[in-house]
Length: 489
Image (cartoon, rainbow, N blue to C red; front, side, top):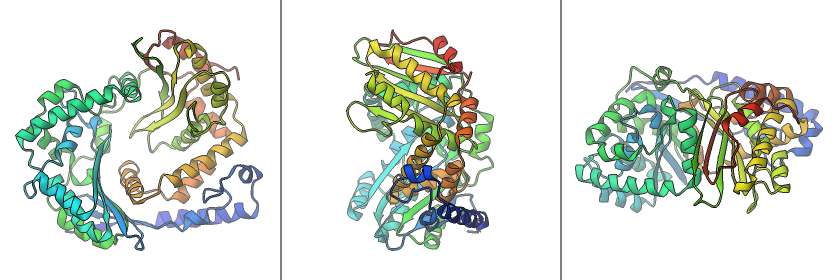
C-alpha cells in the first residue's frame, strides 16, 4: 500500500524560532514570570526542555488513514489505539446513541475471535483494552508491553473491521446501556451538562446526548451499526496513534497490513460538519426538584472552536476564573471568584469550564450551592465573568500562563495520555502542535488580549443557563443576559 509522508519543515521552523525566543527570555527574564513560575519545566523563562521533546512522526496511508507516533524506545510499555472522527454529533435524531452502542458491541466478538477469546488474549498479555465515545470522537486503545504492540494492534484492527454483531448480544447490550443510563441519571453533573448542551445547541446535533434517548436504544439494529461503520469508519476519519516503546516505521507497516480493508472516503469530517454546523442559542433550562439538597447550576457563553485563534486566551481565562471546593484543594483557590465564594460561603464548589468542538464551544462556570445562596452566587459569577472584559491584571495573567503550562505538562504523564493527545490533535488540528508552540501561544496572551477576547465572547453576548435541583431562587435568563454588560468591577 502506497504511503505519503508529511512535511515537517514548518515544525522545525517554529522550534528554531522558539529557541531564539527562549534564549532572549533567559538573558533578560521578566520579574512577573520569575515570581509566578512553577519549579518545573513550565517556567516561562526557559523553554529549552520542551524543545527537546520527542518528535511526533506522521505517515498517511493510501486509504487516507494517518499513523502517528511518539517514540521512547527506552520505555518497556506502549499505548496504541485508533481515534475516529465519530460521535453523537454525527448522528440524526433517530440514530442518536448509535456511536456509543457501537463502542459497546466492539468487544463482543469478531469473525476471528469470540468474546471469550478476546478477553483471554488481552489478559494473557497483561494488557489493558479500553474505549470511549464523546460528542465528536470515538477511541479504542490498548496499553501493553512494547513486545505486544503488534498483537494489540491486531486485536484493535479485528474488532474495528470484523465485529460479528451477534443479534443475541445486541439484545443483551441494550439492557446494559439502559442500566448505564440509569446510573448516569444519578450523576448530577453529567445530567446538568447534557441539559446545558441541549439548551445551547437545541437546533443542531451538538445538543444530542452521547448515550441517546431510551427509545433509540430499544430500536437500534445490526443494520444501524453496520451502516454507521460504513459511513464513519473510513480512512480520512481515522488515526492510528501510539506512544512509548514503538518504532514508527514498524507501526506503519503493521497498520498497512492490519487496516487494509478500511475504505477511503470522498467526504471528510470537516465537510460533514460544514453541512451541519453548530447553532448556539441563548436560552434557559430549569429542572426543579426539591428532593435534591443542593442546586446544580451552569452559566455559559458560546466558546471557541479548537482551531480558533482565541482558543488559547479562553484557556487562560478559564484558569484565571479557577475552581474551588469546600472539601478539597482545587485548581485555583487564589482567583478573585474563589476568594469571594469562599469568604462569603456562596457555594459548596464551583469550576470554570472551556469545552471546544470543531466549530463552536462552551465557556462558563458550573457551581453547586444551597438554594438560599443562588442569588448572591449568581451575582458573584457574573461579576467575575464581566470583570475579564474590564479589569485584568498582568500578575493574574502571568500566574494563569504558568498554571496552564504546568497543566499541559502534567496531562501528558504516561503513554496513554500522550497517545490520546496525538490522536485528538490530529483529528482536531490536522497535526500535533509541539509543546514549544503551545507555550509560545500562551506567552503571547497579555492583558489586552484577555480583554479583547472577553469582549468578543462575553460582553453583551447571548448566554445559556441550566439548573437542576432546588433552584427556584436562581435568577431568570433575562437577569443573567442583562449582566453580560455589567461594568461594575
